[in-house]
Length: 144
Image 1: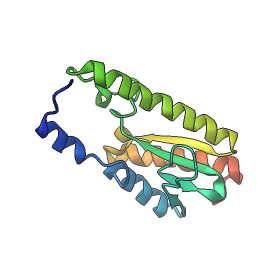
Image 2: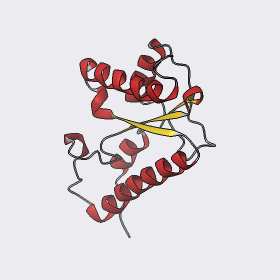
Image 3: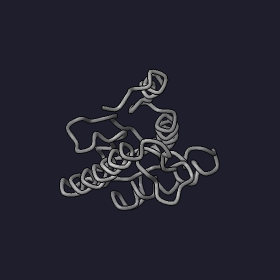
């Protein structure tokens, strides 16, 4: 049986899954570009963070650690309790792939914005521009 560390448990309990700082930054940037969206629709696979029904697009704002962003320094592998963290983080990645596949089968376009993209205003601006093109480029030939 694994002993639970009360200090670690308190830290982990403060980690949110919705309305995180990176998510709020992405929402603010999309809203400033004129997009209107819904949040955390539970009826869609993966419960996307941002849903743009008009464009049949969904945006996931993934934490680099929790979703193991490839080649990202924020996605470091834990040094302790690897027997716990390995399968847990692996399941997160598998669940992401499955949700994206299911969304595509339902006619939605899943888009991922990584936490590291929101760390600097310049990098976020570049990512949001790419995101806007990804959302509207296919849907309406470039018109919002």
